[in-house]
Image (cartoon, rainbow over all chains, first blue to last red; front, side, top):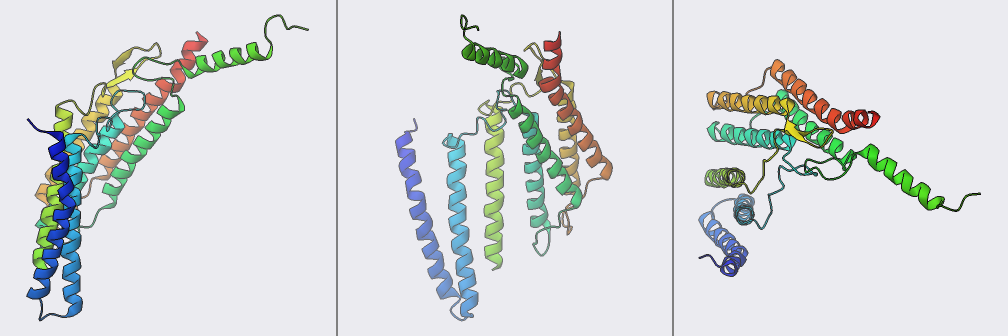
Length: 175
Length: 116
């Protein structure tokens, strides 16, 4: 049975391990490239240190996502409840484009970042704009949600105006 | 430097795959809810199946699958494969239909109900 406290203790050691590995990389590169230009050595050392730190940072984030420490349960949810189609679409396109770029980098010789066509940027822009507009529509009428709670905006406005009229002109207070 | 580049690629790829796997796994077990993905709310509060959402879902899945197939066919190129202008226009139209349906149910339908 997994003990959450033991898992937290293990995760606390991750930054220490990352720093030790970075230090080890610095020492190895320093002695292996002793005959190289100092600037080149510095470039390689900084590259390894950044890579190691970013790798462990990414590892901690992935573990936090998997364990639920970073909560993804509302990732696809609308503000009023229920899943959002625009968020789902943006998620799919983001993963597809990211995976495509990674495949193109891996397959190119020499490795380089591929050109991104305007149509792909337009696709992502349309998807993101749809999400933003959908969110705006949802936010402009928060009384309506998929759970069936709340009232329509028109009904809410009428009720508020009746309440205000009652407060300013209470019964029995007529001229 | 070549080893550094390969290690960076490996780390980046592992991270993207790990993130994708976590998100897909949480959707599969229900931790990330997709309940109501194809539902829209009527003016009377009832949830009903939304054809606009279904067409958007179908279009999204088809475009994504077709694009991934194109990427696998164009490995080793300098640029990502582009999409036909017609596909982008059709996607824009699909989004417009979805947003129009959403705006109608949020703004117009309640007013019509109140007028009744």
